[in-house]
Image (cartoon, rainbow, N blue to C red; front, top):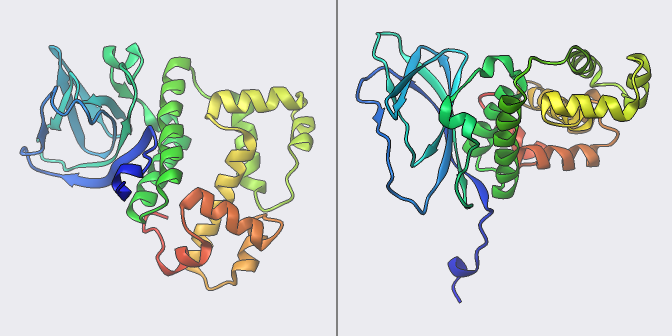
Length: 270
């Protein structure tokens, strides 16, 4: 049996990701029913400029600060609106080997998502693009891809602004990531039960406080690795990790490479 025949492919995996600056009307993708064996969810956010999503007799503007989420192939196409301002976009194309439909009905009725209201999802998407460009581990990218699309679906279906308690918790994590942060102490600080705090944070931000804390620590570690020559052991301490070995394991899980490998070839988006 050949290597190709025995290779396992995750049911959800990152097919393509990148960033483009579009200034030509030739940028045009029609609704399509072709390539049914390669079914994907395309998430494309507008950073600057504006694009258009069209299909099923409807047209939607995609201005800066919004994102469209469509199935490919599917009933919607997209194009540059050609108003003279370049359309700068970031996109991820996520393959899903599963039965239809890939998305809940909400996205069929209205495929525009206000990603500017969900900074954690925007950050997750940018990190996924960086992992793809760095040739990260496919399983790590598959996990992050799945987390991203579930976060978008969950946020759309919840249909509410960020909870003040969850936002205060997020700010505390951002400010105290380099300390020995205790979530039990954090719960007491906000006068809420520990389990309730975790449940609220996960409902709003799509991940547990612990997962968010690790992401913040890794984000700062990437900055230290790319912008300084500090020893890796010292960077681990600066970012709140108890040991360099633990830091190395978490960093590789999050980025697909070791701290030393990242330092040699840092992500330009970091």
